[in-house]
Image (cartoon, rainbow, N blue to C red):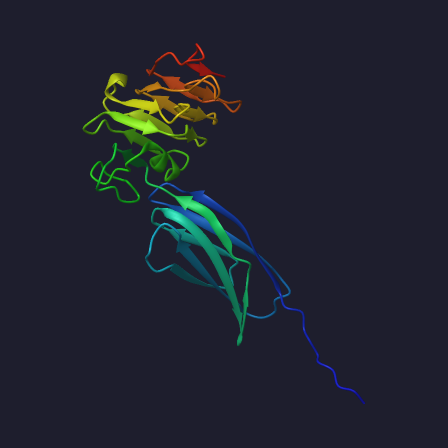
Length: 239
């Protein structure tokens, strides 16, 4: 008579959504979906900030597949979930870069030597505009400071594909200049979001081979109180 192993199917655990307010102060709701569990369960959520070297945030929730995490700091979060039932533990497939939290106001200042994430003060401003944009989420205002030179050189277009505002801080577009640089001179800006706003800056760039100084794609965007110098294509922006 042979022998056999009686294997029970493990439960299926999935992280299905992240919703809420992703501007500081944040309230983020994470939801799991579970099949095949029996008995009381403890849900252990681990939020690891990929932009910080600190310890992950850990939350334990009993018999509830939903976590509401309050005041999550600014960051880009990988999400892991372990479900404990009795003496057994089961892990869901982790979700890398699952959600992002950002300050309501972020700053950039050209070549700032004291730049520090999340760039929430003029003193810790990002040293280039794209870095500040990348740290933002829908609703963030990116304040573009003139710094000592008032000049930002970019080797590729600053890409704005979120519902954010990128605004020259002084209100005078001539105080901040963005130059598409490099051998072929890149565009200065690429905009592709209906709620995106670019205001109070000046820009120059683009060669015949790569388009206009500012390109607004099909999703749209708004440009206000800006100065664009003539590009070598004979036009300054396209839609």
